[in-house]
Image (tube, rainbow, N blue to C red; front, side):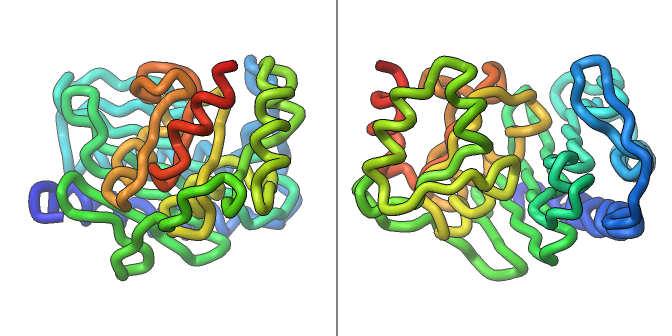
Length: 255
């Protein structure tokens, strides 16, 4: 993490602060509101993003900020923080511990620091450009599995894949796999980077859902792209993999 040491240390501090706030609301029966896009939001989402924004403004003044709950705050075009305070709000609301806090630093639009923190599980996965990927302070790598038939394939939901037109193609892939599970949101991408699954497919995403993955997966030895194979930061889908099964998944889903 030498190239971005200060920003990486700040991102980890922010993840710890988000954990403190979010867990204070977890499994407390808090009120749920519905946003204009019909997605849920809670006071935990808002309070944690507010705290992270305050830390960013204090320690990296002038940097731009892109957050799920409070939008874009203009700043340096070459340095922007991206925040998703609770990725997996539906899981959080239901008391399921597979939600996470996502943080990334973009340099000229490209992620150079990324954090996936799983507050309820106590795991923190982070990476920086050229610094490798680290899980709970130890180096981590993707798996070496190179066949779909030996793979664990993940998605957020098979019904979403079907609704977005990927149903038959995804069914053909996942029924070949050794195991398929619907462990969605950042938890699925976390498992791939940690070497515990071979691929995770997110057919519809926003930049705050995927910015950390675009640096974490390559630094862990894997690959991250949109379903098109292009940059997932500028498109609306994301595929994490160990790199060895990536092309076969993209081919399968394309036709």
